[in-house]
Length: 266
Length: 338
Image (cartoon, rainbow over all chains, first blue to last red; front, side):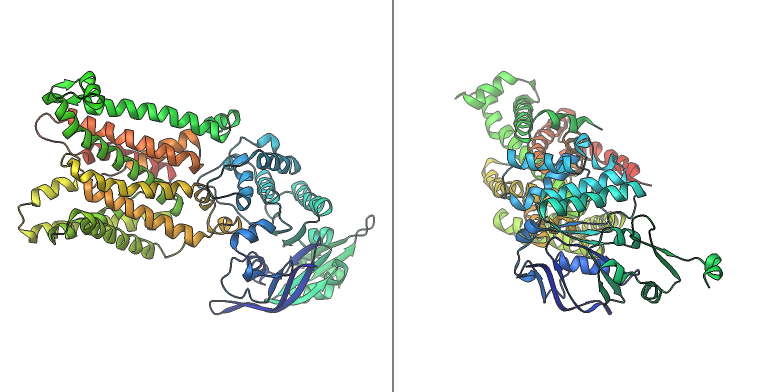
């Protein structure tokens, strides 16, 4: 069974057609990365899947069931979203934040049971934030905070996890740490990962398949080697690109080429 | 600020809740006894206790039962309701400065209540419903002014509230001016937040806030999630629109009830949640009971102070709460600035 199945979906926000006639499937347990220029509809697609848009959710199936048929609570039990930024006007502790992931599994009045506390402890262990459990969220660094939010998502015990540029504000070491974590989650618990990223190199490193969006339309979907083709990227992003395989490990390295180097290539 | 968190590490949530309620109930009991014992002839706790539990029939004991007890009950209920009202508005608008009085919701309820009084409606349900109507109108206007979105900009929200307060104040003065009623003086006093006019026969009206407390208590965990923003709350399984509407209506209703009984008592919903957030953190499962018990104690204490400070005549309790609350508001606003 596919985790996500989208058929002929379009989204119009105001007067702009943000997504048009999009059809694709994401297999269970896949690491799926959505790439594309600014304003190409990446985040809209993610919000659509998380049922945060009122329009356009017809034609989407999550684990074989129409997205519209899920209640908020039901959806929260199988799908978690890691947003680009979190609000901290009223800061909670790390432990409280992670425990919120249990919400969709709890009754209205009930407190968390021992099992919930254990799951939260496990999630914090997994993302290596146990030592921060009693710290306040607004006192953490960007990388630590991101790991806490991922721990909260894990605590939801989702089968599908959506991430909106989870590594945007992080240094390379932290980027790899977060993405290795997702990779492990996928391998150990068969969680499907759909990630939006601007970082083509990370997409090449981690994605099983990539979706390249351009102006709200599917440009290409497939393994990195197919999607990250130089001429395609140059056409979609509108700038000169350099794509080559890493001599040691074989993965693709993508970089835009600044004007000062362009003559040398030509 | 590691204080709240240190405590959470040592006790579970249930343990903390028990400890919190025990301490606050003890404080409440002490303040109630003081409130009953204090009078023009000084504080007599023994008399108050006998009147409360025994069958004493002296004049002093009759005063305690007939005059002071209703007043203390009213102060407790008003304090609990306003503190909880502030807490709910702060969660809904994700703004620690939101409060029924500051937002003008209390003012709207007052306009409604005065209209009801001048139309000669019964205190319940007539005046209370008119007050509820007034508060809902103001609330809708504020949300419209602030952009009609779930994410309210802090400044536009507060400005909207200031505007609403000024407007409601003008309407009230206008109504008083054209009314030619002999009641005008009494209404003015009531407006400043007055607990002295309560009689025992109107106390049952306060029972209608109890279901509101229960509804809000039941929504404690969803309220935690609302603090994360509408989208995060949705993704964690909350029907944000439904919960927000329920909370808004419930809160406006209970605030309207107490406004129609006690007038405009300001800043309780600012001071009490702020203090408890410093001590307990942001978890509403602790904050709601804390605000109920703490708010009750606070207003009974303020009323006690008002009675002790007024040598001749009465000092409205709203004056005391404003003297304490307004400087705190300014301080919080100053600290939240860039």
